[in-house]
Length: 237
Image (tube, rainbow, N blue to C red; front, top):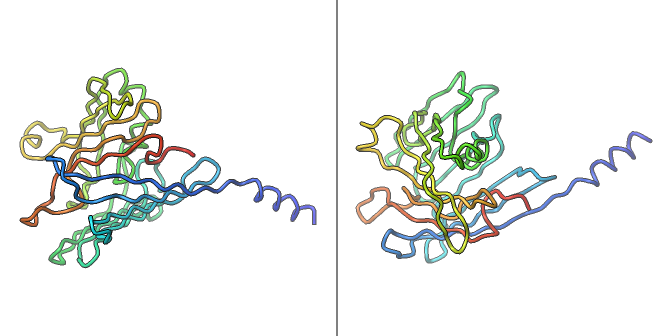
């Protein structure tokens, strides 16, 4: 009886909260492309579940991501699917291994397994966790070196995160960081990605890079995604 009462007391002290965050994706010319609706579930100061839904201007959903914590904070489990398409990718922990899979619009699939994931491995949905881990180093101007999971390749590659001079974004102090290939030859052909990180909240105010939608030629489209503080992704309620 006493054990039951103690267990009930512990459970009743847990705090659950749901946060809903919206981002706006635009073309480089400023034309609205789609919105991002992100639902985050939190318990006792830790996020337990995230769902991101991309919606066209009509409100029609065209992709969704379901993200749950993984063995490493910077490598969550993630499943991304596209409505009306065979295209999808996932990163899943299986014990101490990481299974990565990608299927393109033509139905061709690629699967790889990391038997011994490195400690500096970063996956989709885990970039903020990796940035926060070495936040003080970034503020000092130090470059970070990661192994980054690239969904279309279903594999991890050497990248670096380069901090730049702080800027003001939507009235907030932000630290811009550029994610790019570690090898200079690869940088000549591989696109970079830029994040503007809110200095106070350590979350994304703005993103510029390849988005989730395709252009009129069916090629991945570069986009600028903006969020408005204080409702930023993965900020504790």
